[in-house]
Every structure is written in structure tokens, then in C-alpha cells.
Image (cartoon, rainbow, N blue to C red; front, side, top):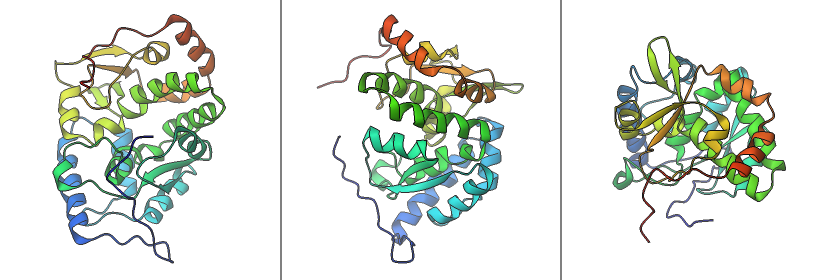
Length: 261
């Protein structure tokens, strides 16, 4: 595991997490800005989830507030975790319908991008779609598969997750829209992913698993679902057989330069 400068905040005896006012201001800046950027770009299912969560703008939400909505809609909840967690813990949580949320928020110096997933990324980027039964079912299935997978299989599953849940697009009657939380929590990527700059391909799970990615750049390639229900259908297909086929076929050449040492 990599190290991080961030430390998740601990709750008090009643489960309430106290954040300093400066951190509430960072949340306000992030959510106010991003709600404007995603207009006309986020998929309707995500917007429906945003409406149901009714996230506060002036302060960082408490996990219990988010849980109340998630449990009522899909039976999910969020779980407080440190800034970085191992793959094993990640899969264990998803398999038990718990979405990991690190209870820290980025500093003003890293407002536009940070490598660690903070509370804004997790709650604003991912939790709205966890109110959607199709998305929730796929995420639950993914967790159960990852828990039983080998170390090598998990690497292929990670690419599938990255190119769907984190950086996925979908077709709609109004044009292509965003559902990936990694995009929806990033102003730069929200604008970039629907521009003429990147490549966009029709979603193919085996091709996604064969596609290398880097976490510290704008993605050169996005996969586009025909509809969000495709994730639900995929959850009921033999994903591990696809993993084995992707392993046999091997990786595609990266569409990005190697990371500088």
C-alpha cells in the first residue's frame, strides 16, 4: 500500500465526526462548482440519486445521513475507512453492501486533483448511483467476485471497475452522459471526457479488462454503456470466465506514456 499525507477523521462517542470550518468550506467549494459542471453531462440516474441524497452544500455530510437514504433505496450503507485500504478490505466491504468512505477531505492545494479517494469523491462521485438498483447490484456482485478472486484475477477486475464505476460513460437519447464517479467528482475530466480529445468505444467487458490505465492522467479511452441496465445484466453473466479470457488474450498496448520515475 502507498503512503498518504491524509488521515481520516474519527467520530466521537455518538458517531458524529467533527470537521473544522476550513474543511466545510472546501466541501462547499467542491460541491458548488461541480454541480454546475455536471449540468447536461451527468446521466439521469445519477441526478436522481443526487436529488434523493439531498447533500448539504454548506458542510460535509455525516455518514449516518447518507446511510439513511442508501439503506432505504438499495440496502447499502457507507463504511468509514482510513485514507487508503487494501484490496481485500475493499472487496469485503462491497461484498457486504458497504461502500468505503475515507473521512478526510482534500486540502485547498489539491482542490482539483488528488490520488487518494476523499469523502467528496466517494459521497458526491459514487453514492448517488448507489441509490440505483442496477448499479448497486453490479457493485455488490463485483465485491463478491473480487473476494474470491486470485491476486492476478483481481488486477483484471480492477480494470473493469476503473473503466465502469470510476470512468464509465453511457448512451442516452440526449447523447452520451457520465456515470463514473471518478469523472463526476473531477471538473477537468467531466469536460474532457465528452470532448473530441479522448477515444470512446462501445462497452465490452473483456476489452475493458485488457485496457491498461493510469490513475494520475486524464483517461485516453472511455467505454460507453448502451444503458445503465447493462451493468445489472453483466452482474448476472459469468464475469470470471471473462477475466480468464482476458488473461489469455493479454493486455493491449497502453495509450499513454510510461510514468516518469
